[in-house]
Image 1 (cartoon, rainbow, N blue to C red):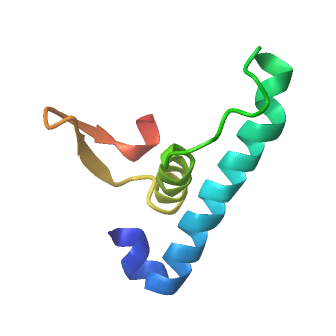
Image 2: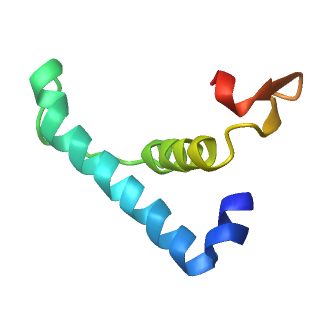
Image 3: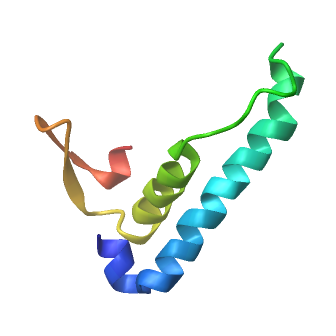
Length: 79
């Protein structure tokens, strides 16, 4: 939410989409080098986009803290 407020909805959406596409392309081209997965297996999911948002949040707000799994309060710089 803080990133979207800082960047605006359009820029945040573009960043989120580019992270997802980049993660999908990396999976398509790099996974065959390290695994024995068949090359025609589809790549779906939002984990690359979410990881990109977490990296951006950690780089822009390193001293902020948040609740992790509703139990632990962690500073962003620890992760």
